[in-house]
Length: 260
Image: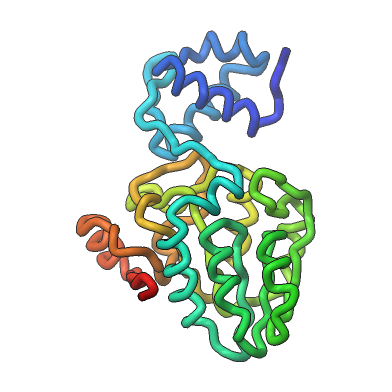
């Protein structure tokens, strides 16, 4: 059966690479019922993320992308570190600010630390983030709308993307699944990557919230280049090479101290 939808086909090709270590264009053409040109484009996109290397007639796996967890599993991972990152991020928010908070488990901790803030407008694509802020008296909440991705409790799609076009924000607080000095910011899902890219375009300052476990990881879909990022809030587990690489690119590195 032909698989002409790009996203599931590329995900299946990547899974084949992970399972078998290498793939051939001719085999993929037969398997997915699309042209060799389409398969080569798919492999080129996977290669551009640093996950595979093109070979004569196919591709070989370079690195395995991190496994995606659903939002409930993510909430339980590195929770203490995430709480300190969220608390530090909240210190950057001032009265009168208009901000975007991307969906995610780390950005969720930022929402929890905004309850006492006043005169702040928050736009978000995260249902859990909107719910967290629903009873915060000083926070005005705007939801992007769009199609619900249940695994991450995030809204995405063309409606979510178009909802951003009439706004201008002071700061975007962005969560990521991977941050690599060469390939930039990445995430598991193509729809979320497209929406995150639109968020980057609409904000004057981009602040990435991530614990150090995400450094050096590359997921399938690129969100943005590192030269678009202004600051990264992370924990003390960041290695010296990554920290130096970020500083060389003019990115402020903020280390969140754990709560006493």
